[in-house]
Length: 108
Image (cartoon, rainbow, N blue to C red; front, side, top):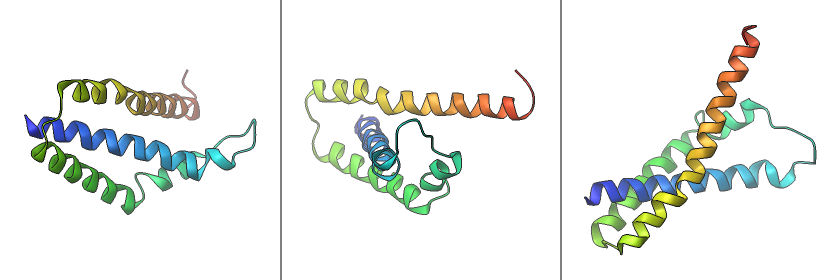
């Protein structure tokens, strides 16, 4: 059970850390009515080795915390519910990528 809890905690930390990184890298300095290029987003995420390193560190940290401290059940429920926020942003991002791919191929 601690593996499931550790994975949940690690992905929660990683998801909110990624959202914070996006905020501090892009959104804080972005003027109104502007956009961010997809290459900027992938440059901070999948093409960046530090992002992958952060994923491993967050998972290891989550496993270590879950292994040493079980925590109350309400904590794990709260992590599961609030973890839907970064998961929702990821789903929205993937949906936009699919729409962009269809638009560039002339499909609708």
